[in-house]
Image (tube, rainbow, N blue to C red):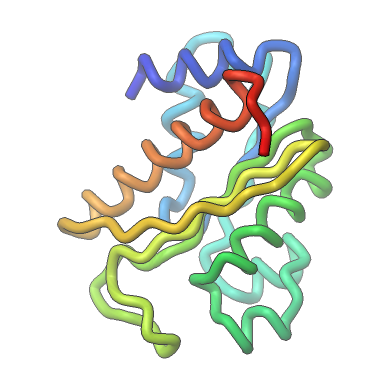
Length: 159
């Protein structure tokens, strides 16, 4: 994980990164801040574990939360956009999903995760279905979020 974090921070040198985390509860921030000097890139994040925080702090529209649920591509997209604006950063990543123990009322099974990415030029959301224990789903989500940041911002190719 440390190597991946170092690659992300190196790829974003000269830019700022923020995170909006739901199911990971700050795991992305924890992983990144384990790297000495990470504050040159990583500004911080917002843990938006409840819909109320997603709506009031990150600006996810209530209609999206009601129609699609917290675990959706639209929520992930709004979370990334909201945290990037709120914390004034170049790049944002967001994670929302179900680590267990149960599914949600929208039919998403445990392990369903949406990861959002936004910079000034574009935004993307990727959908994953991870397996394993609650902690394994959370860990896989942190890794996938870091890999998405690296893929979108580190190699210069943008969709």
